[in-house]
Length: 97
Image 1: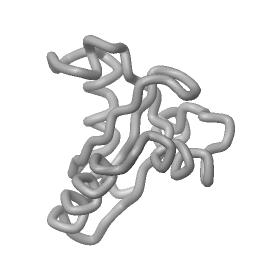
Image 2: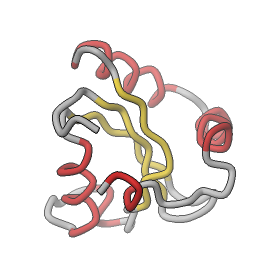
Image 3: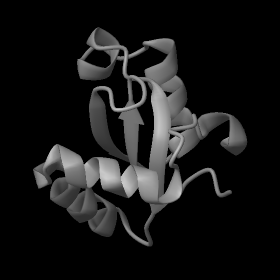
Image 4: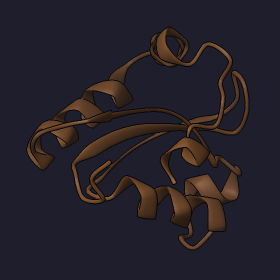
């Protein structure tokens, strides 16, 4: 996996728990920041640290557009997206490092 590539991701606090959609140019570094609580905000406050879905893009503009689209979705559609590729809501981060 390339260290720097535009990516959209979903984090969860647990199966069917609180969800967070984000975008980054460096997935490993960004998820590490979330997991270690290095940034104040939603994911730290609600302990949303489990990487349950991600998608790489060719450009940051594409990734940002996809993230904005996903953020507008209803919760059930986000859950369907996760479960289509990760039905057991496994933490995908360990497979990346």
